[in-house]
Length: 445
Image 1 (cartoon, helix red, strand yellow):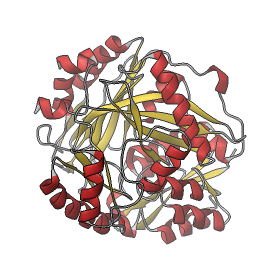
Image 2 (spheres, rainbow, N blue to C red):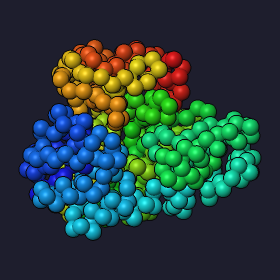
Image 3 (tube, rainbow, N blue to C red):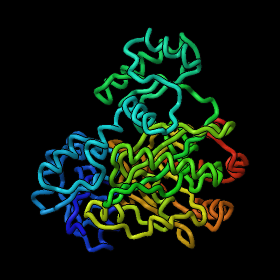
Image 4 (cartoon, rainbow, N blue to C red):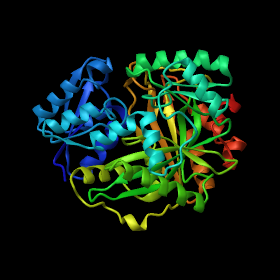
């Protein structure tokens, strides 16, 4: 097992990684920005080093400072968490070139799946279903219009290098496509340094279902079930659950087989997620993208499959066999994750601030992965995620019941908070039925 680990992230995911590392006897090093000096993850690591000011480009995305911190502390491995440098192939290559262990997939796999058009083409060649769309970037508006005419309106206009729900827009007709193409291209150039745009079929009613995969040290790729991620605002997830209430045993088998093929196509190692769109009317599903890192929503898989995914990441990176039987994976019970964000519960606009009160719920089947505590401050420099409230039950009804109680028992005073939204959602007839899609939040608002 790796002896020492630098966690190149912050907040709840840094605490999450540190917790498993500590259980395994792995020494941990935290890196933090000046704005995060008082957060719990800094105190919980065995050692902590400030890597720069609040601006992420000067701290958490500062590859040079993070590598220097690893060398000065004697860390032998780097875990990137999610976001920041987690899907930066150049950083992964630099880590390995400096003789350190990268706790993640190979740089080549990150590169292969980082471009949505390249990823689509690879998946199609591997026999993974992909939605009708362009196989090359739409070089200009005329090319985008030609593609849309072939695919059929409405279409999704997407940044090829995008992720996390960013750089996407729907065009219902040619006039809208002209406008959205220019907007997405400009946004992609500004945010990702790559203005490539692809055009895909848009599904007016669709569910977002993803599969957790793990590439083992011996070369096998296994799938640890699916997660339902259709409760979204602005194409960004708010709630995840496993198993998906929309997936039958037969459909699950097809989902998991396709995800394994996707991982095998790029020689995948470590944890990753194959994201798909599911047409609830026809039962068809299509590859959306692969996230070459640990997902925010990994706890629901952990609870349903009884596997510590961070431990498995470290075992793969150490060349060790998994701490579970890959041939005996089966879901048990039901888990739901609620993303507790510092944002307005109606319009979902960010609302950072000092945390005056922080009381977490507890009890059977309740887990809280948090990044803050009373006396800390949610600053405007980073993502608004404060904590993940995860509940587990013998079935979906019990999980929802426990979620209601846990939401009611979670008290946060100071920053704005979306807990009232979750209280509303847990009483929503559409959500309770399990027959919902990505439009559920807009219908509630």
